[in-house]
Length: 346
Image 1 (cartoon, rainbow, N blue to C red):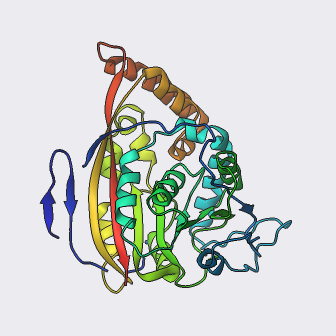
Image 2 (cartoon, one colour; image 1 turned 120 degrees about the horizontal axis):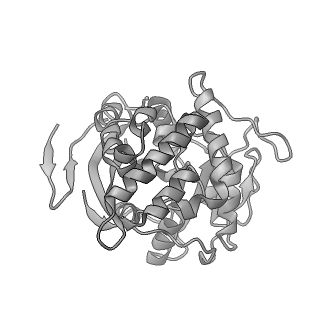
């Protein structure tokens, strides 16, 4: 595959590839946790006949009546046999951390910049679908930025399997009919064929089997529109501060996809053409106390693969190792590494 060295710490592959299957230096910052998100609002629905307010026609067309989900009924998620255990573990973790998730996780602003740049040339109006939206850490700033460029022309649907995360999303938003949130499984999205302009998945693709996820993404996307993924490879995970200093972190995390796996999944005979795979780096300066608190509160779902005793011992070792990493000013500098993927629906 063609390989092109970028400037500084960015590298990227470029080429045309297709399927449906299994860097850039910046300062990482934490997103504010206040709810002042402009005039955005969210409806949390148990899927099913989704309540549609005065909703943009394209978004209203996208949402469909789902036979497994009725308001007032227990939620039913569609699962493939091999994904059932993965989904159950994920929802347990995110239900536990939902109230403090936005404050615990580090926000990578450059990924928002890349997304806006990739989408701002699309013909308006556009409808976004964020799968694994969580508390909206990335969808909300992307929505706001695009809306500022051409007011009134952007609409969004956020999907997550954990209703507690979507409830926190509602706390962070105001009131509008241009953004709706739906409890659903990414393998069977409550969206009609060919109605979405951009499907986003930030830090969540490892929660899915890649091939069925991409097949569903191809189903809902309009031809010529975008699939945008933001993730971390196993190699990048090993090089993070967590992979280096937190015992067994890299070994416990077996869900991540390599760049080669993602590239292969987007090759023929899929319905995608790969536009770009780029490795992106974010430098962060923080305190040992902040990192210890993130780990103690299990801000990554990886921590739920530990037994209680394994986690207790690993946390103690992590704290000692952090002390050895301290700079002269009492802070720690380290690098986040992630992978950005852009593809076009054929």
